[in-house]
Image 1 (tube, one colour):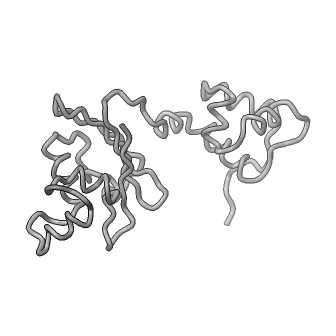
Image 2 (cartoon, one colour):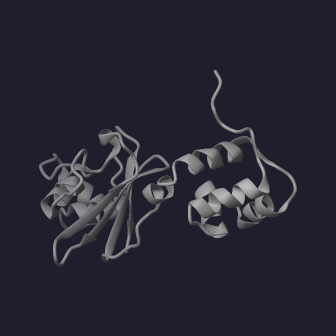
Length: 179
């Protein structure tokens, strides 16, 4: 199979792509998962960029909207949850408990991997239901024993997720909490 991607890029082409994306060298380095020194080398050396880096840069040149789509928004609420599948970030969930506000950004398109499925504007009640879905049910047999093992005084989905990261035996999803 053959793909319509340049195999090599010159330093000038790399600079052009970075400027077209309106990114600083540091930002392109973060996006490409390389060091700033690598980007500096790409742009200043007489050698050509080849391989996976060249392919990525060619894709970015044609899809200038990708960095915006992949950028993690600035945290504006007091609580942030990162809904993960293995090592992949699926959804960022920002929550302001006092005002019961929830804002999300999905980084995957498959609704199975999105924290709220196809719901792009979850309510606080949706958020509470999501938390409970990542815990053992409150009606579970021997719940008091499980709570004691987690060193929790009562059933609270958020507190359970703090202890368990919302990990379930049957899947690879989990939640990282940031305050």
